[in-house]
Length: 316
Image (cartoon, rainbow, N blue to C red):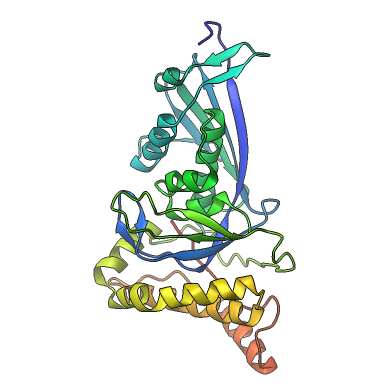
């Protein structure tokens, strides 16, 4: 490692995603392993995204992070898991123009600074943690010259926020729940890219900018412990629905896509109500929007373009 003071930086941008077949409930809280597969659509990064800059320098004396301009702690287990996993995969980096050469072993003692910014409300229903951890892992992988592909990186991002694994791809993405106890087979794969169904438009109605009263982490834990409906959903409903959704996406079948998305969203909220204590993620405005959409669809006899409701929560 060169002796003179230097700073190496990498900036990445990662979009958020909205699940159409939802992830809710973990079989392993530490590794963030889900009780069922899920499918999401990645949103256009030009509208909703996280931008993260990561920097390394021998002059840094500790790891630090700023989110939306405010410094936050990196001591939490989820951040530490991602940092540890990426550092373990770091490779040699050489920038001859700047006179920088970092050996693989040097990464163990170098410290990082991270600055991340969301261009949408945080923890208000738009999967900010998914975009945030996906962007962090992707940027760190580029900074440290890690050789893993996006599916392999998704298994690391998953340890920060479950849904983050799906934000490493565009288009439609499937998070495979996996069966291995170490989580090695729980990762994301792209079903189709963003050009497959490029006429599909997603409208997001922000019904409240306030943070959720019940965090997704707490809500999932309570649902796993108390909701019999969640167990039925994971074992009996989701496996069939996943196959149906994959076919609808493949064939660009909007009618089936809308019906499955609405049904899964409704069942998710039913699981929340079946949880003890019950969880409320929708408000009066949410219910009025759903009512208007359903009345329009019923009057036309079929799901109308831009007329189905998918989500009102932030997954974590």
